[in-house]
Image 1 (cartoon, rainbow, N blue to C red):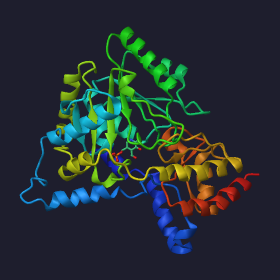
Image 2: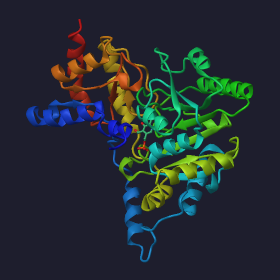
Image 3: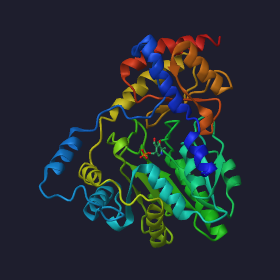
Image 4: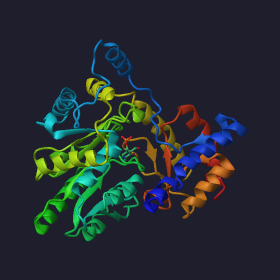
Length: 394
Ligand code: PLP
């Protein structure tokens, strides 16, 4: 007898994985160059050379403790470098004691949800959202409350948001730049969000924590800015990761930042450390604590993603697709050309070898997600297929 809930999770279909596997099988039949796989959000640009150089140098140091356990929140010197970098970039006064290093943003989020959730608590997320939120929040024993999307620009539907807030609201999750829409929340959106949260927290007599999930923070396109959320709302906890900015998703390195300004910050930090312990994380990977902290002022060639967006967005719009303007990350979230996004994705796959992820899994039916962290040549080759797909609906 095993836990049914865990078995269900372990055996659940992953639409994204299935599309990816289908793409591999199809490539064996029609050739890799004839399959247009926009399914997976795996960064396609290489890490900057300094990452490998640093790793090699560290590995070659004699008698180094690089393979040893570190302290649970992470090596102090590594956390100091991250704090210094944040202070330089965001004019903060962050200290190593406010940083808890994790195995990526996924673990940062899990630690936060476990740390904050008491029986009956609710965590609000905005659709479209990263589907794993539902798993992480349920795993922490809280209830996830979804705010339906604001369909035109994928900013926030504030009426729906205000109605969803209750005295049980413990946290609100934002993700900007966003997976799956690529949308960046404007300063006005964030200020309005902060204003409502302050008002409601005062009314309920307890803090409402804003969990800012920002693994795409540095992937920002010309004309857009990603404001530093702790400057706008005091009870902000930042979840970050080097998976995307340094193209290191497999190395699993991120952090939670709990600034001193956060209500009960010492308790929140301690509970995050307790959650990491309870989840068996022990410590973030030692080698990459050092590598990422020594390279944290660098990024991969992130302009690559904007170049891809600049090819795809105008071309798709020209063909008649409705495409919300991405301000960052490497995703597009166009409307499907029929209300049933699953049927649309199936037609794109079966008739045109275009692998697009249905929006239903992101809480926004009627859309599909394209991950454009792919070879630019593939994007160019895919355009006639997108055109034929659009024409098939005329
Ligand atoms: N949050 C969002 C919005 C993501 O898109 C991802 C990964 O794609 C994660 C969190 C998890 O990132 P990590 O690889 O750092 O665990």
